[in-house]
Length: 192
Image (cartoon, rainbow, N blue to C red):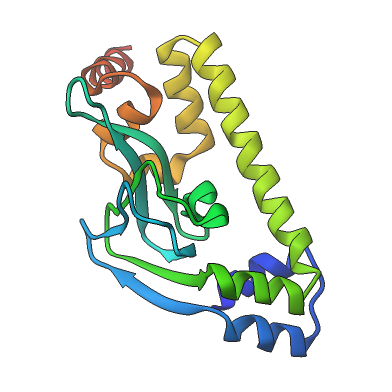
């Protein structure tokens, strides 16, 4: 819980009473490797903050049956279907543990109640959403404008911890390239 409070208080000031109240809204959940946090068609009932672990969000490509990675999330990141959570409508993707993962979760009704009781948290969650939106915009632009090799190098530079913890095939799917292509890049770098 302390890592979440630290994240929050980096952006907004909370009194000791507000910190205590904030903590009361969250519950801890552990997923084993391979467990699902959310499945396509389910309603996302909780917003989830990752204390430790790795999650992947993906859709299954109807044409070839492959996983299409939408995002990868690690310690101190959020992993939620924002649209499903906020509208309480069915999710269009899956979220699954890549390794054992510990989460802090808050239900949708509790989230609304928390924001009502601690209005300054609205600012914190706006900042989190702005960061997420910026990341999505960058990904769209880079997928349109950069060659596959450039996207791979940008990923390694931007997310070195993910690159060291996540299998190569997941990174390849996230970047829209093949795992073999990444192997060729690595082989080329070793021979240089």
